[in-house]
Amino acid sequence: MRLSPSNLLLCLTISLSARAADSRPFPNILLVTADDLGCQVSCYGETRFRTPKLDALATEGVRFDRFYVAQSSCSSSRASLLTGRWPHQSGQVGLAHLGFRMDAGQKNLPALLKGAGYHTGIIGKLHVEPSADFPWDWMPAKEKTSAPVTRSVGWVAQQSREFFGSAKTSGKPFFYYVNFFDPHGPYTPDVDQVDGVPEKPFRPADIQEPFPLKAPTEAAKKRLTATIINTILRLDVGMGLLMDELKSAGLAENTLVIFIGDNGLPVVRGKGTSYEDGVRVPLLVRWPGMAKSGRVCREMVSEVDLMPTILQAAGVAVPTELVGQSIQPLLQGRSQQWRAVLFTEMNFHTPDVFRPQRTARDDRYKLLLNLAPSEDQAAVELFDLRADPGETKNLADDAAHAAARQRLEAAITTWRQKTGDPLLDPTRVQRWKDAAARWAKLPRAKDHANSVVRIPEGDLDLLK
Image (cartoon, rainbow, N blue to C red; front, side):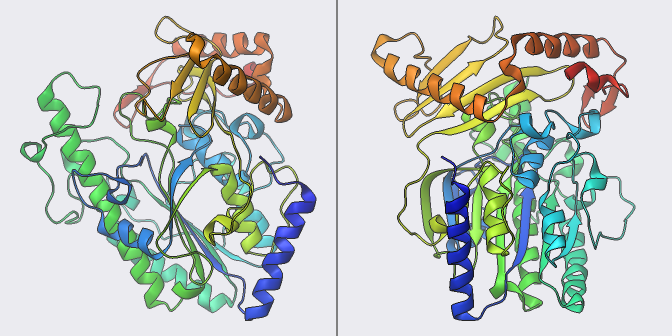
C-alpha cells in the first residue's frame, strides 16, 4: 500500500504540528548500515552468540520483526535506501563497483536533506553510482590500512566524534550515514580480530551449529561460521562505540537512529537470492520521545519506507515518485491500516549473475516468480511461511493453495505495472540474459575472495 499525496501531506502536517507543540527542533538523523547482516542478532532470536549493544538499541527503540530490503544485493539495496525507489526504477540493478549505475535524475536522501539545511556526512562505502550525485559536507580523513577502514570500529568512533563536532559547529541538524563493512567477507583468519576487537574471538572448536554455508567440509563450515560470528561481534562493539560518541556529544536525545542490514548473509539461499535469508534483515529505530521504547513491530516494512520516514521527520516534502510510506505511526504504536502485501526483487548481482525475480508476500504466503527459470529453480514458487518458514516446500502446484497463488500473482502484476518494471517486456529479459552470458566470457579480476567480471565501459547500453 502507498499513501496518496494528500495522505502524505496530512501525515507531514500532523508531524509538524506535533513538533511545534513540544517546541523541539527537527531531529538529527543517524542512518547506519551493516554490510551483509541478516537477522543473526540476539534480539532477533540468534542463540549462538550475544549482541548486547544492538540488543540495547532495540530496547531503547522499536524492533521491526518483518523488515525487507528491496533487493538482496549491496548496491541495489543501498540505492533503494537512498532514493526511496525500487532498483528497477532507479536503474541500480547490480553492483556499482562492477559497472552498474543509477539512471540520471534520481532524487536522493542526502541531497534533499542538504537542500533543507542539514549538515551531511558519510563514513564507509556508498556503493551507489554515480557517487557525484550525493553531496557530503563531511567525509573522514583517509587512513592507510590493508582492511576496509570501517572494520576498525575504534577508528569509526574517533572519526564520528569529529563529525559530531563539525555538526555542532555548523549549527545545523545533521544527516550522518555510517556504513560498517562487517560482517561482509572475505572471511579469512585476519578478520577474526581487528585492532583487538572482538576481545575474545570465537574459534572453530566453539561452533556447535554452523551457518548453512557453501563449504566442502563440516570443518570448513565451522571455521567460516566462527569468523562470521567474530565480524558480527565486532559490528556490535562498533555500534556501541558509535552510540557512546553520540551520547557524549550531547546529541542522542534529538537524534533519530536507524540501523539496518543491507542484505542477508552469504549463506545458502541467502544473499543474492529472494528467499527470506536474503531479503529479511534487522531494522532497529531509536527516537527518544517519538518511538516507543521496547516495542516490537510485526507489520511488514520495506526498505523503500525509510526515505519517506526520514524526510517526514525532517520536515522535508516527500517527492511524489517515492514508492514507500512513512513508518512514523508504527514507531508510535498508533493503529492504522498498513500494507497487506510486500514486494522484493532481484536482478543482477555481479554482471554474470543474472537472477531476475519478483516476490510478493502477505501475512502467511510468499510467491516467488523466476522470470528466467532454470533447471535449478522453478518458474513459480509458493511458500506457506507460517507452516514452513524455511521455504522448503513449493506449493505452487498444490490445488489447496491455488487461491493464494492467484492472489499474489495478481498483486505482483499490478505492482510491476504501476512501477514500470522494465522486465515486463520478455524481449528485454532475453537481452539482459544475453548480456550476462556475454559478460561471463570477459577476462576476470580478483575482487575480495571472489573472481568477478566488470562491465566494460559503455556496455550498460545492452540493458536499455
